[in-house]
Image (cartoon, rainbow, N blue to C red):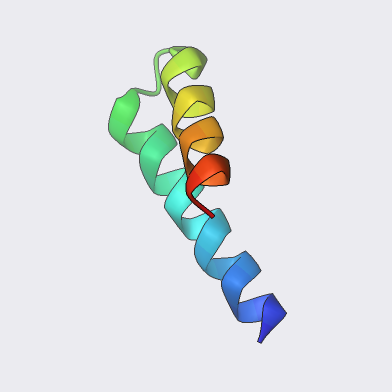
Length: 40
């Protein structure tokens, strides 16, 4: 079960990062990760 959650988390993180732009705008991706960590 834990593996499934981890996989979903990674998918969500990569989705956020790809949403925000592949042009090196990593801050948005990191913010999304921080928000996700706070929520979970």
